Image 1 (cartoon, rainbow, N blue to C red):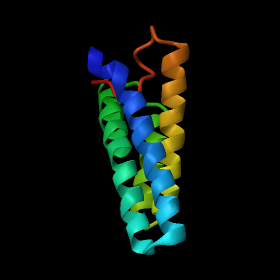
Image 2 (cartoon, rainbow, N blue to C red):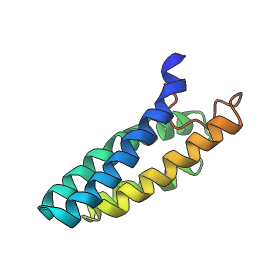
Image 3 (cartoon, one colour):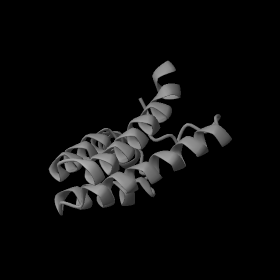
Image 4 (cartoon, helix red, strand yellow):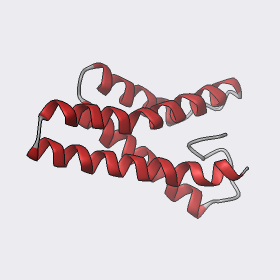
Length: 113
């Protein structure tokens, strides 16, 4: 599908821009806005990982996505929004690199739409 090809680059762009924007706001403006920016940047990744993990569990192929899911959700639940944004970015970078190196394998994609 065409969406599958553009999902990881789009999530990568959202994660990088949210992380950098949040850091810039943290350094120069109201600090509570930075938390909202990081939440908004890591939520799409959390949803994509949740969907991918759910489908993998149904196929009995659960993997490292579960660790990313628990890490991002746990960081957000504990109020560590910068940590959640960094974990989301690391996961998206890994999925993007794997997609570029192994385009024929569909099971390693972050967003299995």
